[in-house]
Length: 347
Ligand SMILES: Cc1cc2nc3c(=O)[nH]c(=O)nc-3n(C[C@H](O)[C@H](O)[C@H](O)COP(=O)(O)O)c2cc1C
Figure 1 (cartoon, rainbow, N blue to C red):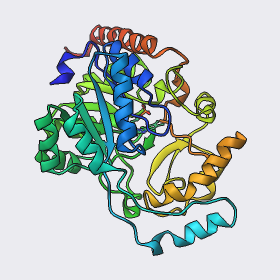
Figure 2 (cartoon, rainbow, N blue to C red; figure 1 turned 180 degrees about the vertical axis):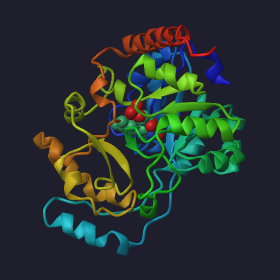
Figure 3 (spheres, helix red, strand yellow; figure 1 turned 135 degrees about the vertical axis):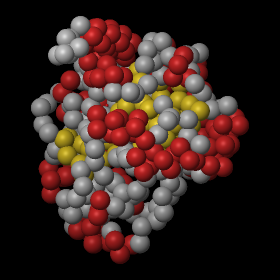
Figure 4 (tube, rainbow, N blue to C red; figure 1 turned 135 degrees about the horizontal axis):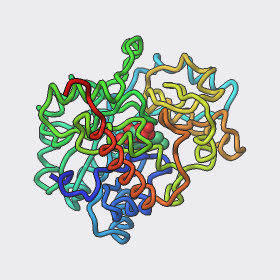
């Protein structure tokens, strides 16, 4: 199990749409953590290039993260939303695609990496078996005990527990508006539930921005902490300027479907507040809002772009990734020692 061999139990969260770069992944892997390439939105050829670029920068293990495709959404469900957007903004053609899933699996089966992690669903047992046969571990993002059981049954090696605090898209297997009335569990709750229910190792994600929080996740039973937002301001990250600037401002985050048709946590801005009626239709809405987001980015307008970030975003430091990994590790160790020296009454 790769997690047992890491120099430090810190996993770089895959962050598609800019932040993830070969330089960032390699810097984390070279520091003893596990770097990740985000393959979401990339075609298989581009993924192949990123893998090559990462291998040129590190000989340490790293992972590749894939979006598991869902099914097309009937047009009736999103036509009204797209028509309303089109009256105000430039919009694109809402369309479905599978994010080049089959070609990316072929690529990884022929040219394996140590870990393939998946989000938005669970690969089939046959797909997991194919990645195992190539020599890769398969990690599956889960947001509930029910999803964890499905992933374990399918043959996953590791569960990535995504708490409600996490920035970016919810990584659960479904995205149904009828589930919105129930709050997703926070990370500490989810870790307790998962470790009680499933025997697989768990990597903890969501709101972890300090070594103390890394330590808390480990004490609660996680094998490692997966950290995303805290790396957004590293010089190696390809974070868009508007997001890099927004994370330092103390503005709350919100779960929204407004930008992509799939629930995601982003820093509150005008567009998401004005489009709380967005339908569940991913990736159709992602493609429909592409031009309006690009136009806003070109104008430097942070009010109409997705600013994906976790709840602890103001703690993201401007540090080289290697320094951030070293800082998180040292702080985690100190936090565990501090906790050990605490007297627990009666014992
Ligand atoms: C900008 C951004 C992009 C993300 N993109 C992905 C992705 O491509 N694949 C994925 O599995 N998770 C993605 N996530 C979610 C992370 O894997 C992880 O759950 C999250 O970053 C953890 O919470 P934190 O951001 O508070 O550290 C993204 C998160 C952010 C902030």
